[in-house]
View 1 (cartoon, rainbow, N blue to C red):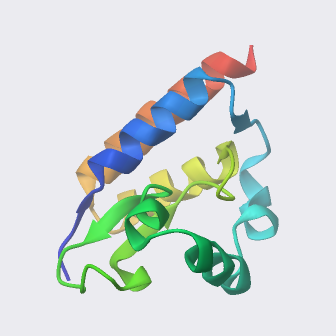
View 2: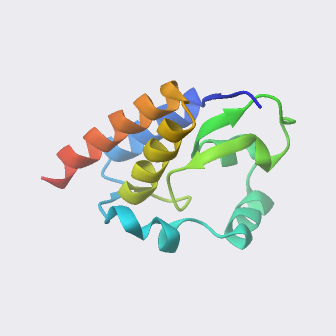
Length: 117
C-alpha cells in the first residue's frame, strides 16, 4: 500500500478554512461527525470519485482510481472541514509514518486554531 498526500484535497481544505467553512469541534467528536458508509455512498451517487477524493487527505496509489477505498484520512462531512477530523487524520498519519499527510494535517490544524480565535 502506497499512501501519499492528496494535494488537491489539501488545497481544497485550506480554501474551505479560509472561507470559514469549518467546524471548530472537540477532538473526540470525530466518531460522531465523520460520514457514515451510507453518506459516503450517497455522496458518490451524485458526485464523481474525483470529487469524493477532495475530502480525503490521503490517496492510496495502489488502489484503482475509481475505487472509493483509494482515499484515506477523511477530514470533513462533505460540507465543512471538521477540526476533529483534521486532528484524527494528523494523529493516524503520525502513527503510520505518513509524514507528508501528518504535516498537511498539522498545517490545517494550525489554520483551524487561528480561525477559532
